[in-house]
Length: 146
Image 1 (tube, rainbow, N blue to C red):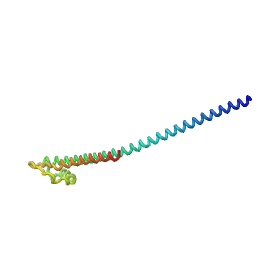
Image 2: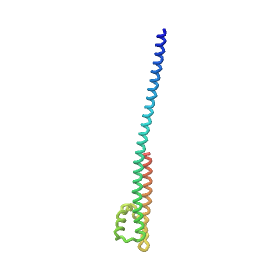
Image 3: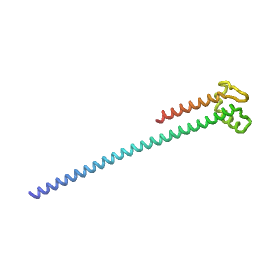
Image 4: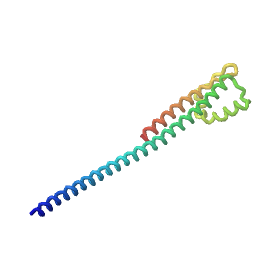
């Protein structure tokens, strides 16, 4: 009988060890599952950050190009306002580069002249329209990709 009792105690201990081992394995599996979920979430966050970075870069490029256009149109406005010599190389380049951008607005308003100075209202309208279009395009990009 003592052998049976010892065997019974050993079986109980062995069963406890098996249960403890099973609990440890379950805990480890749960930790692995949580780690996988965390990694998946991190991958989603990285993908979102990459997409946002592309959108931000595109918007920065749009603002940069619009800023360059605004500077070009401002130079044209100032050159014509101060009566710059249109035969000057710099003035010719500015007028040549800016003409395609103000072409849709030509003859929209009259151009008042004052002793050789020309106030091109159409250039101001073009600047306003391009600024508004830029704002609308940037808003549209944010709506689509956010």
